[in-house]
Length: 243
Image 1: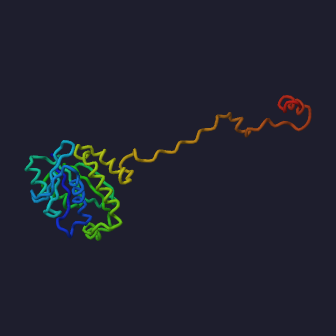
Image 2: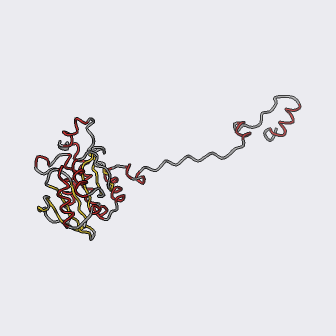
Image 3: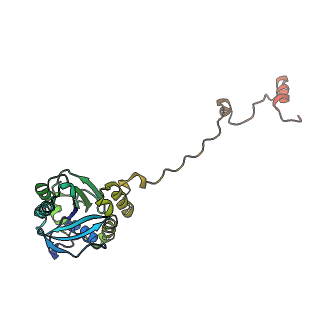
């Protein structure tokens, strides 16, 4: 089994917050065929399903962001799983809006939900980080993450969430690079995979090689003296035929 835990805050007042993009991602996955309705267990909303023969438990902890690890840790211990069976999906200030990155382990980067997961589940779980952009200064971060996505964000947000849901099989099978490639192609993020970079324009063909003497002459015929015996002889040797 794999647990995919989206991080966010419960309640209608937080539903559209940037901080709740993790909830939004697992909601998109839950809409796939094969997943049951949301129910309550482990102090979370959960939905069970099957992806490519692998049992998947979707979770939206209802403990509020700062205590997310309590709910996920409870489910992990109930199913006798380890951190390697967990994928946390959450917002990332240090990624531009619409970009996604995945890694195993690492620091919490100041994210309180990740801090809680580290404390209750260990650190060696996979982290699917979804960019929401940085407001520019530390003083603006709180209002930024707890503010709703703007209407202008909806196009890239829907594209990103749809790409995650459509390629969830790669995530379940641990094919992280393939998942990133698919998301990059869907969102236009070419930095995730070198194969998406445009091919270099072909170099123009080199001109036919010439001797340095020929190049120096500039493709002109030999210079001939204008008069005198030498001029007559040279004209016979190099001059146009018929002269």
